[in-house]
Amino acid sequence: MNEHYRIYELQNKIKTSAYLAASMIQQVTNNRSDKQLTQNDLARISYTSCLNLFHTNSMLDPWPLDIYYDIDYVYVKRISSDSYKIQTGWGSTSQGSSPNDMSKNFENVATKNLAAVQAYHPDLVCDKDGDERLLLKCYYRKKKIGTFNKSKLGFLIINPKTTKDPNSGTSNNLFKYYLVITPKPGLFPGRNE
Image (cartoon, rainbow, N blue to C red; front, side, top):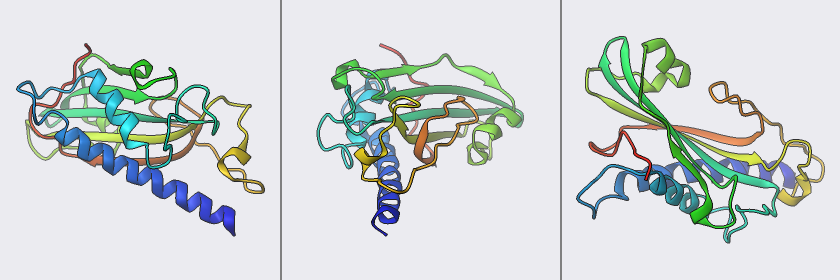
């Protein structure tokens, strides 16, 4: 019974982290004249949004809970009914021992068709030209495949199942939550500093 509650609790925490990240994305650049998000913004948003589970730097190396936190970002802007500008990025605690050393990046902007956008998430499809959407894919991931100690998360009997992300191919996802929002104008495409 306790372990079933633990699964529910971790699912709820990853969902809460997604909503915290979405709120921070919309507001992190409010006091700047340049509203465009940077890779360092992604790292700070990822770090801060996971503090509801990791109350210290335990999401960072050496990962005492045997898991780390990751947000993958997928930004799209509709050019025409079958043409979208798309940019992916991430902020992850998969490396580094401090928030400054976290893995973070924005990929180059690419042009993709409607089917490619739908493959990421059906809610990314925009209604009219110029519309924008942002998909946040939040994960608790195993530190390393094959070395995960489930008891560090409070599981003695239940073995949480991992899932594979069809877009990135990452197969060590323990808990995930996807959220699609409409970002404020000017935040995207993001840039690397």
